[in-house]
Every structure is written in structure tokens, then in C-alpha cells.
Length: 269
Image (cartoon, rainbow, N blue to C red; front, side):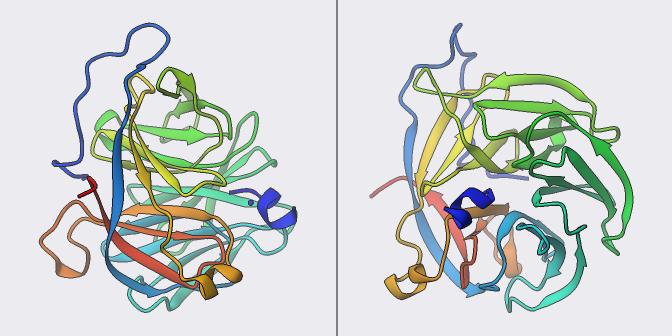
């Protein structure tokens, strides 16, 4: 997420575990360890500085970053073909995205502006302001709220229509704050998040902030592919992708990655 790396960086029944309310100070229990099971891979634009992914009706929405290069685009996820693009103002750095009904929200890094767009045309239909940085964003449909990260160990909940804040939760891993929470994906009643500058994806209980599971997503790219790539960043729930029966599927990629992967998160074994 963020230029710092370049300059210097509904879900699954079987995977969603219910947890008891965390005690004061957060859940100190050790999270479940998961690994990535790769099912397939697809071409991905190696010039895309990926900041956010969202899959809807087998169409991929992708937000990209970098000043004077940020875009919102729609992509055929199986071919990597970019169907339509809309550029952000050159003085803005695009960040996380999410869909809410027929509209799409797109964050900016330091500009404190969220763009509201028409889902079909990607045209801007409104803006909202917020304080601090914008990193990741997802729509928590069961609770009808947006979930936003800002690089700290805190998630902010927002009204999906007005973008006004409605609350926060501190994210903890074994009782300690987990900062640099990056791109988000709301799936079922849990939040999945990339952790910036790592190969980890975590599953968060948004009611308590506790990290329940940690996914080791290392080793997806070959050595040659890694040479031109940046960090892991981009996760989209993909239930039934490509006509498959499985519901517990995700698409994952990274900044400047030449490939995107269809995966399942499973226990080691």
C-alpha cells in the first residue's frame, strides 16, 4: 500500500470461526495459522500499482495508486484485460475501494478525499472528506457499514451512504496492537486484511478487533517474477469464481505483480 514501498511499499462458512467476546485489552489467544492453496492463476497488469480489489458478478474492480497514475478500472479477471479506466486527478494517490450497491467508494492516501462513483460507468458522482490517511476499505454487508484502515492499528466504521464515522475498533494480535493494516476485504462477518510490507493476510473479528487467523501468502511469485514486483496487496472474495462450486475462494495479487491467483486459505497439512 503506499508509495513508501515504491519510493524507498458472502464468505465462507468453513473458514469463518465464531469467537467469544474478547476480554478488556483484546484477545490474547494465538491465531490459527493458515496457508494459501493455489487453485489457478491469471494474467495481471504488471504496471498496475494495485491498491484495492473487488469482485462482483465475475467482473473485477481494481483501484491503483501513484501520483499522476492512479486509476479506477474494471478488468476481466481471467484474462487480465482492462475493460474501462477512469483516471484520478494527478495530485491524488488512489487507495482502497469497495462496492455498495450500485456505487463504488475509492479512498486517497493523503488527500483526505473519498470518491463516490457509479459502479457501471466509474464516473464520479460525489465526494466525502475524512481525517488522516486512507489505506483500505470494504463494505461489511451484515452490519451495513464501511470498514476503513489508515495504516494504524485501528479500523474505522463509516456510514456507507454519507461516509461519516460511526465507531472504531483497535486491532490486536495476541493482545498486541497490529499496525499497518492495509487493503481490506469484508467477507461474511469477518474482515480480511493485508499487512503492509509482509506476506501475511489476517482475519479480523470486527466486533472485538482480535486477529483470529494469519495466512502465510509467501512464495506465490517465481524468483523471476519477484524481480519486477512490489509487495502483496489486493484481496477479493470470489465465491463460485468461474462457475466453481466452492464458496471459500479469494483472488489475491500485489503491486506490479504479473499474475493474480485464485486461492483458498487452508490449515497446513
